[in-house]
Length: 304
Image (tube, rainbow, N blue to C red; front, side, top):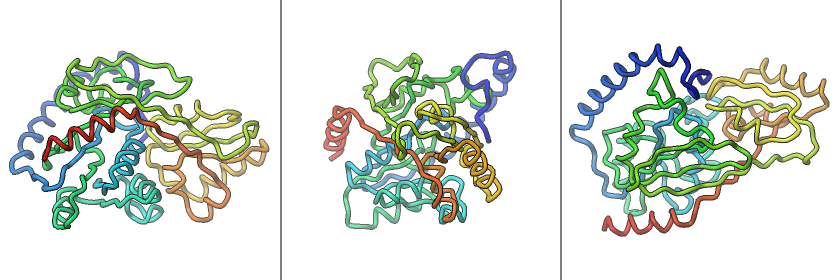
């Protein structure tokens, strides 16, 4: 689905949906408390990289950076599995392409299997801040500075999975900044460490090359704004599975405008092998403050 237009501002529709949000959150808390009974405790440290903002914050590059730094496996649900992504999901395929061991499916079952190994390295859990079935040793929440907390409301009135006060249950927060993006204020509890990460979108084409950009991610506008010389842009629903007709239409647009097709890496892995021959993706360079890795190392030492 496409991100609802009212998620980033307090519109009359958002206020009309607020009572539904109250009911949604009440039900979700009841379910959470029931599911936490008998939560699994991993022998190996579990680092949860999660969010309370529903998609689009750039969590996957953070997971990749942390897993690479620790040489750790990643456990994830594997959202939107499909034949185009070898039935593991676009985010999982993207991580595995960077040499990371990714385990998709039931996270508790995968945790059990990983704990049977002799390896003692930490396990990175992609998402799962709202998952009570697994006890986390360290929970890190990720926010995008340009999105902030959106309109501040919980689903479906806003983009939050749970109220901002739940940030107090995290061990740390990472805020991702992007060059040239307007930033929104975030109210983070003073006792929660806040670290910063910086992203830079790098096009595979020469700077003055006209581009036809397309993306099926949570907030495609961020991707479009990060590129130069975009002559046409097309947004698709999040995790969209592209058809041959979609690609043919995009190629026609690019040909008429004398432009090159470009997309995100997450979208690129969902394309067919044939489509990948003519389409390139922009890489997303991610740099996390070194202070975060020092903090993470100290937290892991305290566990032993």
